[in-house]
Length: 307
Image (cartoon, rainbow, N blue to C red; front, side, top):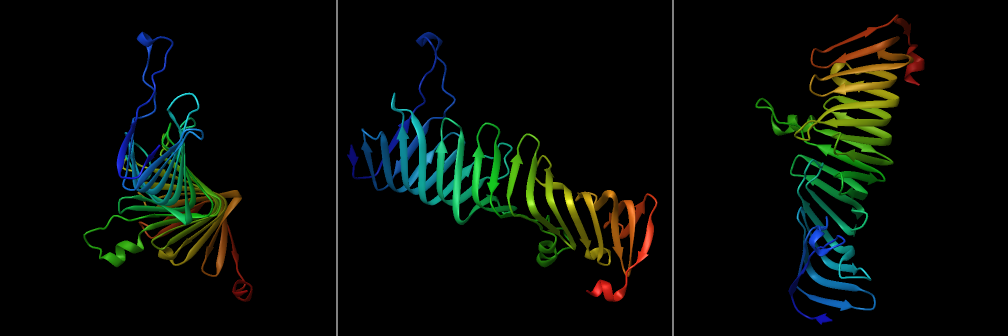
């Protein structure tokens, strides 16, 4: 079948059940496809191709692209998979997710497994309005739980709330930036994002490095807390450039504080000396540092520290 002009197509889910009287609706949404160029269907391959300004509408999302391939089942006309190419743009209802928009170069939707894989070169751009952007070369969307996996080196940028007393430059300085080397996984049920390997987070005058970080979000999907584990390094320019080294740190953005612990002890580098304590408490809100648990001081040699 060849349709050398613009058109529309609606694919409805098949009924399922032993008897017609006991049939239930499939959990796959009704799918509407519109195109401006042409459509071709090859029956032997069970594949339909749509060209130019293609739009795919489902209940909770809209996909637009320049080239679309749809694979149908061998047994009926239900969709098995969908592949969009060139100028891929997805707009979706968040429903507890972390993003509302995605831009990339290629997307594959597996109907049976209920996952969508979006790729971008050099990266996919994920957006939540003007407040959040995520960059990653590969993103997997899990439809069942609205979870999301970003594979490869990536970054997350979250815009800070502007106060009445701040100008644009001051507000931008408080933006949150998280970078990672391996992957990020977002769990919608827990409102939690986990970042893996070579993770770096910066906000205002603070910087946090570690092997892994977990970020927690409030009901409005605003990040409220970071928990870092493994080779933790914390630098606070707001606290005279003091540094902390340990194995575990909790950074509370609401209270503007950070608690560092270590095994066996955490290290605080302050001026020309350092102390080892069970806990080091950075209070950026009150501009003070405290520590607990049998501390002892060691003066750092000036020449050694310069090296």
